[in-house]
Length: 196
Image 1: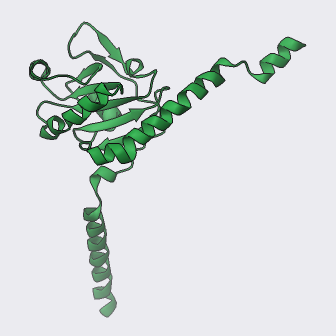
Image 2: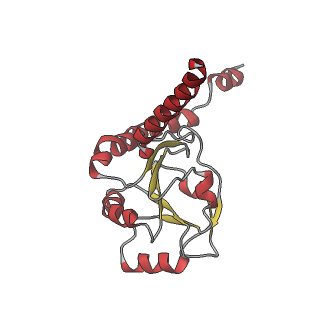
Image 3: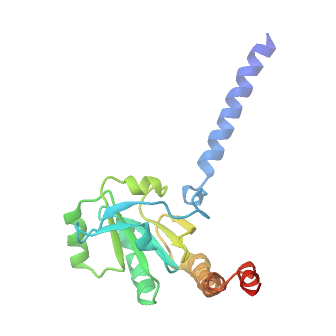
């Protein structure tokens, strides 16, 4: 009889423990399976010119940020001054305008300065799903080869930029010339083949 009461009690306590553990996790710290992977492919219209088609290749070629934003997102507006500073400092920033109205986004960009080099318009959120977007804003750091090296869910802060984002960008930029040099050098096998 006591065993019949003990089993449900253990199950309820275990379930409550898991629930409390889950509530204690910060959703901004969720690991992304995309970090270390190539940027997911997409084909979208450019926000400012629907006739221009953008793909992930438009975000690749140099160390860059990719920011996911929308006009209805108040925290996106709050982080924009930091993005402007980064853009003025020479850091390329590409973007997805996510689940937004094109007209609202264009009005917003007319009223304020834009930090973005390229903006892909993702009204249905399809590319966002492939990129693992949980909410706006989100920011990714891409290396020059288009590999996602960092993901931030939520707004960037000055401290986060100083502690994580800028040191990573500096490190990736330092690696880029060496990687380009290695790609440009013929392999030893090629050299040996030419010598014989």
